[in-house]
Amino acid sequence: MKANELSYNELSCLYEITKLIISTNDINIVLKDTLIILSDMMNLKRGIISIYNKSENKIFHDSFGFKDPDEIIKFDPGEGITGKVIESGIPIGIPRLDKEPLFLDKTGIRKSLNRRELSFICVPIKYNDENVGALSVDMRAKEEDYDLAKEIKFLSNVAELLSETVNKRSLYAENLQLRDMLKKSSPVGTIVGNSKTIRDVSDQILTVSKSNISVLITGETGTGKELVAKEIHTQSKRGKNPFIVVNCGAIPEGVIESELFGHVKGAFTGALGNRVGKFEAANNGTIFLDEIAELSLQLQVKLLRVLQEKEITRVGENNTRKINVRILAATNKNLDEEIQKGTFRQDLYYRLNGFHIYVPPLRERGSDIILLADYFIQKYSKELGKIITRLDTPSIDMLMKYHWPGNVRELENCIERACLLTNDDTIHSHNLPPSLQMKSVSAKDQKLGKFDLLVKNYEIELITEALKLTNGNQAKAAELLDTTKRILQYKINIYDLDYKRYRNKK
Ligand SMILES: Nc1ncnc2c1ncn2[C@@H]1O[C@H](COP(=O)(O)OP(=O)(O)O)[C@@H](O)[C@H]1O
Ligand SMILES: [Mg+2]
Image (spheres, rainbow, N blue to C red):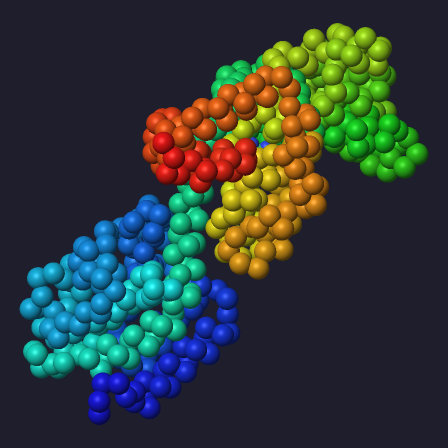
């Protein structure tokens, strides 16, 4: 039989693998079960699928989601047989493993086997002409100089079937790496952001979490106040004890007292049994009083007493109970104004405001918008079981230009929706909501303050000058300005500068 003809057995194996690929979108199942089929039907043992992670320029052996990322052995393109195959895109067949010094056996699985009895085949897996991985298997050795062409031909067919799945797997690895980078760049646990303002907030969180001081968190709606409160709790010594959230604006006036402090049986109509309030539930932990400005003056008095005495009384009961609770409170209102108006008690304000953390609006956090967008793409693509890896340039532009009145919460909703809408691995500008589409550059310009306008004009001046000097060569212009080509391109784009105009002019 000639090498380019497949046997009945080989064809039915390819057929099984095709059925498998059609039956599921689960990358791990496709890759793992393909190896099982090869082993069962073709007696090709110890199959390995190796994945090339382009952004890291490293290869790793896939373990189908079972391994801790830190345990995965990584190696370079060109290293060992697999590295050579992925680098060159050319299959390699070794008739007898004991004759091959290049064979590294990185996995160690052949330590106890007799290499003289083993042949090894490794074929590249390509996607759109790029080598995204490799498939390798062992088989029983025949003669020493046996021609493995037929087996290579068959495995190349399998590799072709796996092309799209392995490409997805490779993108998934890049995604994980991105998330890792985001984690490292974020100063405190769950808080994503690298802007000066957010790093300041993180520093403040670390400072206050060392003590029991009460903290007042202010900022517009959706900026992350609750996240900050949670983080203060988690980082503190109370971190393992309860964190209880009370939304003071969402509980009807009639029941809030019993919500906060609990009640005893028969305290009022409908109090059928004893009930533990939020303060008792938070004992030894932290209570987070959200939207504190919504609390009535009457309850403000009661709350103040609790904070002073460190004890509560359940509704309908006479005796008091000692509690040990840390108080965090938040509001999007200006409490100074509320005090002026007479709707908030000054003495309570002083009690709550042991330390003040102001969470800045999203529009003041610069490129954190993109970091957060990437983070939410991660979150929602995973939830939706989709692989989405990037934002296209027009959508980055739109996200950066928008003024985000609903802050991080609005950005999160916007990205969730875009992840749902996109049909490929990219978020496009038309996947973003209409409210963002309408904010053209000119609409934003109307809102630019004097300082922003001066900065913008100065930037345009500098960039134009650099482009003139470099004949419109963006890379060289970026070098001249001591910045990166990407940042320069981004600015050229938002300021709508025509860099080609400067080509070939002295
Ligand atoms: N810096 C951040 N990093 C990651 N997620 C954030 C960040 N800030 C806010 N979020 C998310 O945005 C949403 C709104 O935040 P939240 O804390 O409820 O805002 P607020 O209490 O100020 O209205 C939540 O889902 C929160 O997890
Ligand atoms: Mg909130």
